[in-house]
Amino acid sequence: MTEPREIVVVCYGNICRSPMGEVLLQRALDERLGEGAILVTSAGIGADDGRPPSQGTIKAMAARGIDLRFTRSTYLTAAHAARAWRLYCMEQYQMDRVRALLDEHPERVMLLDGEEVPDPIGSGQQIYDEVALQIERLLPAVVDDIARAISAEEAPV
Image 1 (tube, rainbow, N blue to C red):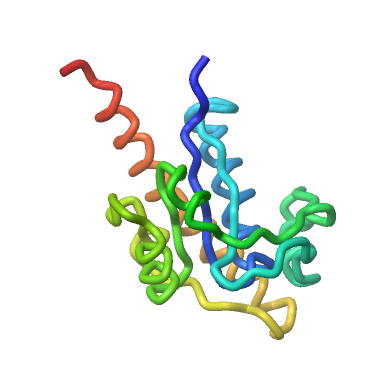
Image 2 (cartoon, rainbow, N blue to C red):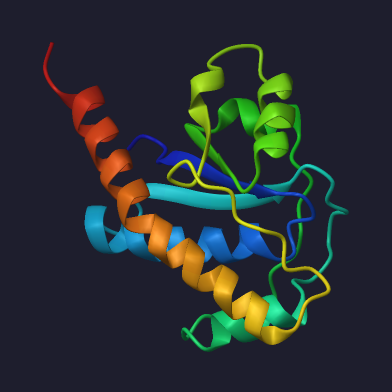
């Protein structure tokens, strides 16, 4: 059996937006393509390894039945970026930084449906909830794009 394609959701510190994006995208892809078809991870371009998600992130995901209490942050290395099939960033400057890590295929790095997602760090719970809603709103188009790309890659030549 081949390894599943890996998608990395990227933000700065890997304690707010990208952990939300990781679990929400994984859930959406599992529903659409079947469990295990794609592995979604997350990382940060400025992350300190091993930090827990922010309380706002934990609460926003708990409201959706997702437990992030044991999730820990990961710094995005060049090796991690290189093995990813796609990388979805939350802001343009993050895309630029991730593309600089890659020797080839900068087209694998993109925003979620072409839209920036603001950083809620230091904000109240309402802002975290709004960020989670924004990510959820962007995901159907992202999942459609991923499904089309997989179909195109697997189509007979």
